Image: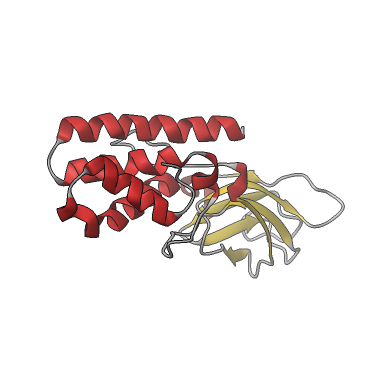
Length: 194
């Protein structure tokens, strides 16, 4: 069976499970696999999915040294000021941020940190920031839905959903097998995008 849409993915999972009493749960298993790809999962050794299809550009205009990140933001790729200098801002972890002597100063931003959904810059300025980030892919819901993962490597969803399904029915050996395949497929997608 060729998996090209959300509907064919659900059918492929159902076919491999061969358990009619789990049909209503398949969408949940796919959804869980999707969420694990977007954020990563250390327990199942699934890295966060970061492929070029997820790269999104946006402009942010800070006020008082802060701007709100987009709601679909999981990870920064590059951030720089929209002026003659396109040097990227340097990241400082939040625990080091408040010791930064440039915090509260005015001038061209050189550093940034992220706290929750807030981007903080130092020195402070209202210069437009160009942000290139990895946007989370939207969950599929309609049968005709598709995305970059289904297009490039549909088996990734299949392995993730089967790992969740077998975990649900307490067949942990099969769950672990598919979890390993799932993690490997996500790593392969990331590698192919590098």
